[in-house]
Amino acid sequence: MRFLGLEPDAVVARSAGATVNATQASAARSTLLGALGFGVASLLVFGSWAVAGPALYRMGGEAGAYLVWAAAFILLSGAGLSGLVVGHGNRMRFLAAFAIAFSAYAAVWMAGWFALRNRTGEVAGAVGGTAAFALVLCRTFGTARAWPDVALHLFIGNTVGYFTGSAAYDSLGGTAGKLAWGALYGIGFGAGIGASLHRVQEGVRLRLQARSEPGPAAQAAP
Image (cartoon, rainbow, N blue to C red):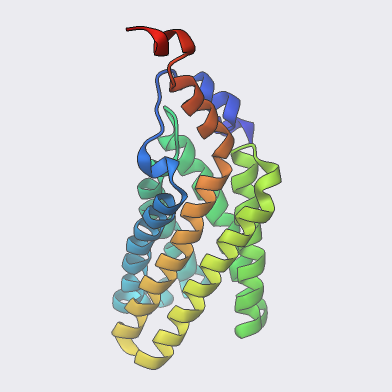
């Protein structure tokens, strides 16, 4: 997906003077910010399910409600996660990339759920959806070889978050259960997204860091 301009050569070419901040440089911090950013978005989206779910189902049916929530995830979390993207001029590019990636994930997940409407459908959606998400991220950032790692990060984060959240909802029920599901799903999947963004930017991060380091002559100067 060269048209988005997030491949290493494109990022380095327009990022003269750019530095890699502490969060972007650290896998742990990127994972934490991903968990927090996507977690807040997920809590808000699941909160809307608790408050306005019946109205959304009446207006657009189940599929319509899911599409509204997918759009909300993209808008709420895409902006917050853009801080994990290194280089200059990347905010809108990343929002577009995230919209494509999350839409692919949501489409595959919904297909699995609507086809089977049981736990098997949820698992199939998680496997296929996170694989699609990973594919879009890797193609966008020009790191095709990172796909196995990225798909694994996303699958683990999504699966742990979604199914622990589902268990919490089954236990608590009602609004509290929905909010617990939203928080756990968001933290888990967000952690996977944060770790994935760190992985797909490994090459460009190293190039920007190397370019910002002083050369031998500068190091020797008094």
